[in-house]
Amino acid sequence: MLYSICIGLILVASILLILAVLVQSPKSGMAANFGAANQVMGVRDSANALEKITWWLAGIILALSLVATVSMENEMSSGANALQQDANALLEKVATEEVAMPQAEIPAEGEVVEAEAPAAE
Figure 1 (cartoon, rainbow, N blue to C red):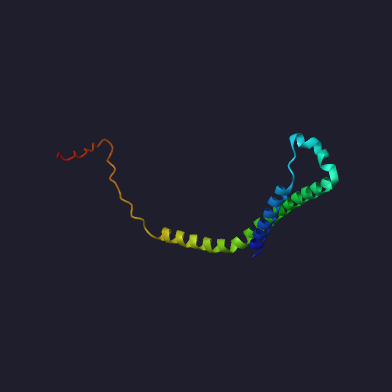
Figure 2: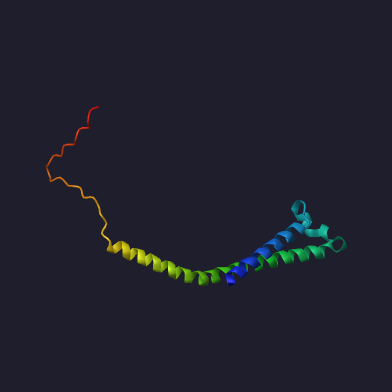
């Protein structure tokens, strides 16, 4: 249950992160002299806010990924127990059954075995 919630939140945060990156204005050449061009008419503040949002969303995605990984191990362990029981039952079945292997005669030392000639057509 927690795993599914985390995956849903990761998807929402990923879409928001994509939008936050796309809304940011691109900087030209050498990062536009380190942001001096963005200080006109309060644009600098919105750029800072978008950058903070971008970093926060990236951190949220990272944290949710770790939580989802931990919860996945807990949720999948119950399914793994059933799988392990099935595998053990199959191994026991194979171990108890005799496998019919064709046996070839091994020639004694020094004995020459003549191969059969193929039939002529």
